[in-house]
Length: 177
Image (tube, rainbow, N blue to C red):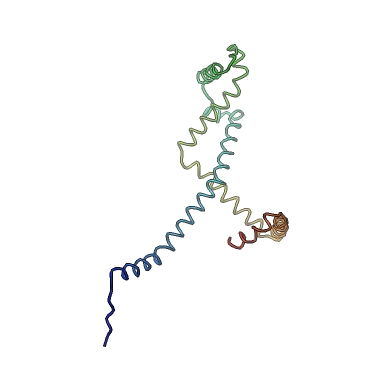
């Protein structure tokens, strides 16, 4: 004789809800971890690398003709920006003196704005910092994989574990990672 169990909406809901969690949670959690890891790498590593590349472009524009053609402001833009900056001063300079004193700074600022605008119009440029970060992590892994790298890593780890606050936290963080 089979014993019929009474099913209620509440018991069915709990059973199917838990079953759904068991099926979905690993995938959702994995996706969340991947997204958070990407955001961490992008924010803390790739964006500073991209900022450094933009700064290098601004500096190189003064010395490299192809970059000057692309990013240098026109004479009209430069004169107008110098005039605006000069008017914003408490004591405006004469036009010739303003051009001499403010010109290089204003030109650099306009170059930086042009590069920032150009960079922002091309979403794929932000991937440069990410690729440099990935390559740097790969190279670090290769270097630390050798005998010399492992030895240096152990010595550095020994130094870190001697710092008072790190001494208590580092072993547990290392265990999690």
